[in-house]
Length: 158
Image (cartoon, rainbow, N blue to C red; front, side, top):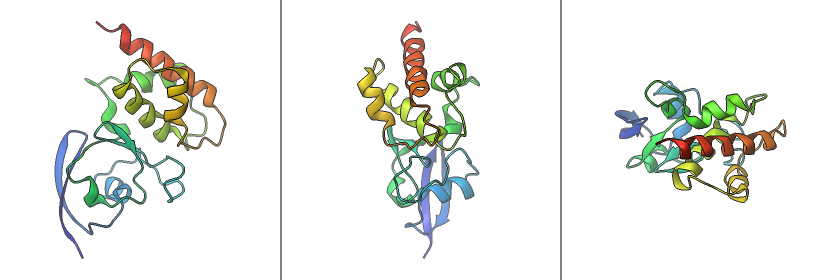
């Protein structure tokens, strides 16, 4: 049974008619046209479907869209700042952290959420933040390097 649901995604509010139990992942991809968020395992275990909801990295493949109704949601597409890549996105490119792309959304989203809450994280904090995201290629050392680089760049801005 559909009902009106209002979601604030990437700074814009949009009302949609949807089943309140439909996972946010499908709403983002089908209603909002946002393809950065990916379907991976469908079990909240891989991290491919992560978004930032109220400054926290959250999986969306099982969680009902209605539960996000009062949240500020940011997707990969919403990370750009004044037309420029987010420092985490730029650092991932500069360190060549991406390989197959399966985990990329989850890694970037988790890193951004971490740096929003802890601008100068330790390596242990970085590992802990990225741990929920499964990387099939095993490029964790590059991800850690990228997050450290992004942290340095963010902290050096006036």
